[in-house]
Amino acid sequence: MQISPKILFEHCYGKYAIAAVNVFTMEQVHGLFSSGEKANAPFMVQITPAARNYAHPEMLMAMITAASKIYPKAVYSVHMDHGDEEHAFNAIQSNDYDSIMIDASHDSFKGNVKRTRAVVEEAHKKNIVVEAELGVLSGVEDDLSVDEKHAKYTQPSEVQEFVELTGCDSLAVAVGTSHGAYKFSGGDGIQFKILEEIQRRLPKFPIVLHGGSAVNLEEIDRINKAGGHLNEGASGVSPEEIVKSIAYGVCKINIATDTRLLWTRVHREFFRDTPELFDPVIPGKTYMAEYEKFMLEKFDLLGATGKVSDMKF
Ligand SMILES: [Zn+2]
Image 1 (cartoon, protein in one colour):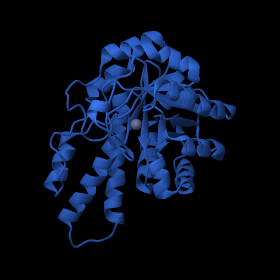
Image 2 (cartoon, helix red, strand yellow; image 1 turned 30 degrees about the vertical axis):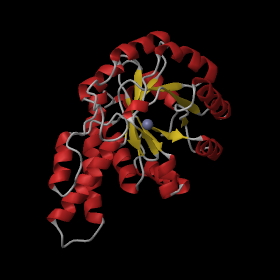
Image 3 (cartoon, rainbow, N blue to C red; image 1 turned 180 degrees about the horizontal axis):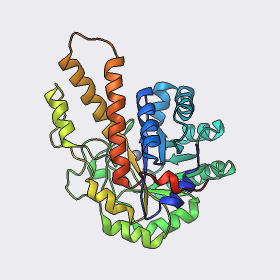
Image 4 (cartoon, helix red, strand yellow; image 1 turned 120 degrees about the horizontal axis):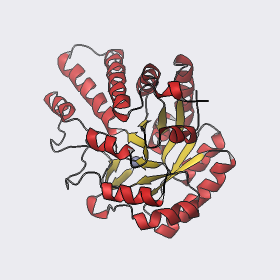
């Protein structure tokens, strides 16, 4: 069942978090929906402009619609991640999305407000909710790349005015997470003081963490043992920090890197261990099974397992 993140966030605030997972391929859509149904956990399917440029928006939506039939008990929202105006307005018109992120976080405060406000006005006409971002995350994801010296934490003093001026429905904040596999090179982790200050100024308002992948070092090690050359210094957000952030109003945790590392590990090991094979279906099956296992553990960690049962629709 496709529902608005509004319902999900009201239900989870302060208690558990919604995994918001980026999908690019059929295997990922299967893995996400099958795990959500199995865990009885609500989730968000995220589509980026890069995914739309890769697979085509129609193809992505057709896969999600098919998955909702194959896994009829799955409860989910469809979200556009890191939309620019072109993709955001196109997504609003398509009527396929429940939620859109407009990422104008690289602009000035004023510019961010103006661009966010314009998307909110259009989206709200169709009951589509809008996620905005304040502060700048470091890291690399799809077409986004920000080095650490240009990253900046969200200023708690700005959040209230920003939400009031834009009318956005949730806020992505920069509090120490980053995009990609190489996080926290400064070793500071999540800044709970900032999160606490944001929550004080925006009580009950849903907060979003981007770059929520754990980047398991065992995965990095397996990838490198199977011919990869990933930096051993890769690191992600610790599970303890993610869990702790939920009490501070974090409702949505974005996950992309972990599912990419999983893909890389499964395929590298397949090519290393069975060089005589050339059938994409074989590693594809392994990937779907491993993806499901990964997501079941993630739902458990976020406290989302079983939560569909006590939601009222
Ligand atoms: Zn992001």
